[in-house]
Length: 379
Image (cartoon, rainbow, N blue to C red; front, side, top):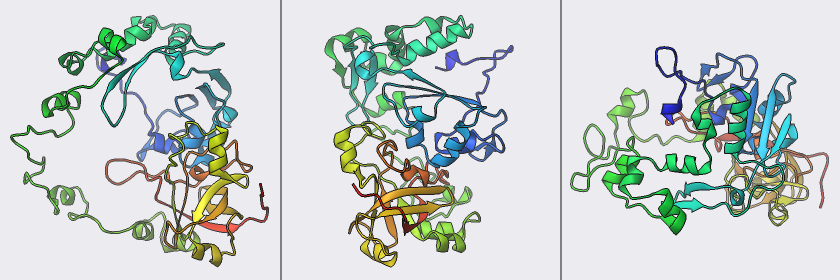
């Protein structure tokens, strides 16, 4: 809410220091901390982790762990479950589930706006995020009215927008009916997402210089990129990049992918026994490899292996698969570390780089080497 952003004595908005989650490890370092390649001016020495299992979902896990375990770093985690992040936190506070809080939400597929009723009051000493931050603000001496808002007030603020009003989406209506599906037209979507290049149905044009779909993009060329869709692969990128090169690929020759398993939603439910027994084998998370790569390394299906790159070492159970070509392997991301014997997972090895376009993650653009572990876990 920009109207609540702090301002200086001249009424100018004070720009907050921020860190990209993909580069969280880089951003919290004592020395040389950066985000998007820009130095972090004020070293970060504290973090409140909520709605996230940081030690499982962020890449380059060991870099993060090393810093948060420092005596001069203060980490607080709020969660209804004792996650892997709780293990490295200074304080762990009981959070609530969606059944214990009132909220408004929409899913990413259907577009329905839904009312989430509070089914039961928070159990024990658990508090909602809103209650926690209101209490923290009060303890720190803040007196602004916004820190007195309850969940109903926040829901009403959330719906106090031109888009919600044009769709007749009100707090009372949502609470009574439960859900409302907005009418999606170019005009209403433009109101909701003004930064999207929507066009009216009678004037459908691409927002390019030519007004057409461009296979050759002058805009890309002017920005320093190849003007035609770049058909190079990750091997080319790593070979040509100044921070890696051919020697790097010789040391870490296997392309390592980290897709999500359909059994979890990010790291949600990663502590459920019926899920862990399907993603943990012989005591560790699974890594799926082509039979040729396994044979070349003396690895059999079910063996414990060590996967390594410059970010660290993770222990997996090897699983033979025909779903990938030789030279490629993958492991499920966001698997909880607690159920494993080694306490390591895929994100230990994940790239924490930023894509050259769109400033997105490069989680699935990593390379590793694999060898059979000296210590074998069975059952």
